[in-house]
Structures are given as structure tokens and as C-alpha cells.
Image (cartoon, rainbow, N blue to C red; front, side, top):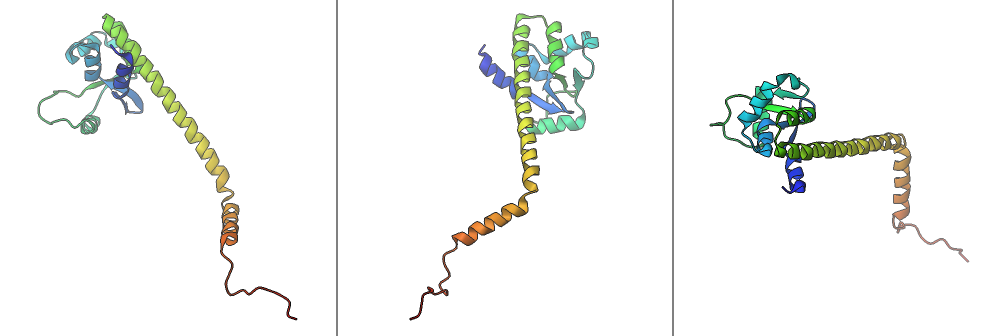
Length: 169
């Protein structure tokens, strides 16, 4: 299993729903090499390990939006709305699914979540710095405009109507 490719694949399977980064039950099942039904049975047998901040079921609107993102047919497919698992829920799955593959995949998934958190942190940092810069520059708009106007005046070619000043003898 190429972990770099797996990590890229996993990063593309993480969605932002209800203000949380989550993974779909069917995507996790594929990664673990089991059927979605088996994953959900394991989760339901251990439901006390999965509070709502670890796992929740999508509603009609969320599911419709998600389906439009990966362009699926309205025919066939699921009879119920999918479950999604947060980072903590995925970690909890490792205690429920005890195969070697589940352990390996969970480690890669945790690393993907950490990598995304770092990326979001960097973007947040940059956004904050940009906001600070904008607020500092905003106060100087008029002065900057005057400087540009002065530079434009200096760059203008000399007016042809002005004659060379000299001494008349």
C-alpha cells in the first residue's frame, strides 16, 4: 500500500459538513476493505463509543449537496442517508475494527487529518496577516494616492506649449 497515494486519496475524501471535517461511511469502508454495511453494523454494536461529535447521519439537504459534488445517479444506491465520521470518530473506529488493515489505514487517515489541520492553520495565519496589512494600509490610502499622482506628474512629457526660457538680448 503506497501511503503517499493513500494519503492523497484520503485527503480528497474529507468533507467539511456542519463545521467539521468528516469522512463518509462508504469511503471509510472502501479504505478498510469491508462493506459499508459491515462498518455500520460494527459502529451500531458499539454505539456508546460514537457520540454525535464523533459521528452523525446526514440529512436530506446535506446529502443532496454532497451527491451533486460527485454527480451520482438518482437511481439505485442507498436507502438511507449516509453516516459521516469526524477525526475522533475515525480514531474510535480503530478500536471497533480490529484488522491489521484497519490499523494501518487509521494511521494514514490520522496523518491526513493532521496535514489538513496544518494547511488550514497556515491559511488562517496568512488571512490574519493580510487583514492586518489591509487595516494598516487603509489609513494611508489618501497619502498613497497623492504619491502616485505626484509620480504621474513627474512622468508626464514636458508640455509643448511651454517655450524655453532664455534671455533676450
